[in-house]
Amino acid sequence: MQKISFQLYSARNFQPFSEVFRVVSQAGYSQVEGYSALYATLDSTAIAAIKADLDGNGLSMPTAHFGIDMLEEEPERVLEIVRTLGIQAIYCPYLMPEDRPTDASGWRAFGERLQKASVPYRKAGLDFGWHNHDFEFIALPDGSFPQDEIFAGGPDLSWEADIAWIVRGGADPLAWIEKYADRITSVHVKDIAPAGENADEDGWADVGYGTLPWRELMKALSATKAKYFIVEHDNPKDLKRLADRSIATIKAF
Image (cartoon, rainbow, N blue to C red; front, side):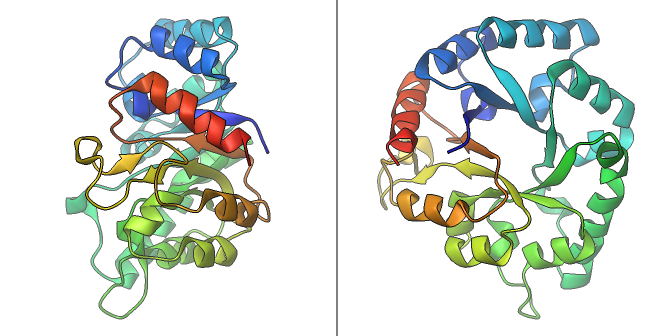
């Protein structure tokens, strides 16, 4: 098992991040994953302060999410953040509903757009890929899937596979893991509560306390190129509970 990371989006409602870093470090994590809102509006001094705070808690940030607009329009700023924080892999995480294509050619073009956006980052030696949600696994009118079309348009894109979102999209995660094993360089490890439970947490669960067969999934993922395994929960009520229980589950595999 690689070092276990923690997606800081899970902690956005438990500020300040200085306290989040302490909780995550004490739970046993050695890495965290950043997300756009963490650094999008911060200047160089503030980014350097985040790095110092991470160092002070024995944490590193090898992976991070950046929005498509920032990646395309502010590459030098992104690279400055990357250098300061020691980021090694960038994943574009989302596309707003109103911006999503409605046919295969549109999604293929979006893959081409990501491929083009990746050039300065791959030239800098960074891994660059796409992070999925559920909409990539909902069939288009011609029967194709956005996820396939994105990768057809972006032959060099890596994949940060969010397994729980694949399931929420109605797809078989094991089949998709096998299909794109050579693309998966990072994995979001989260869980889905049983039907009707955890409504106040949007139906998500701490890892090992939901319905996903994580032991089987981890075995399948061991055959991929995944280097980073990142705990996430989109709307937890208790940060410490999430951090403690999820890492304990993963370490038990």
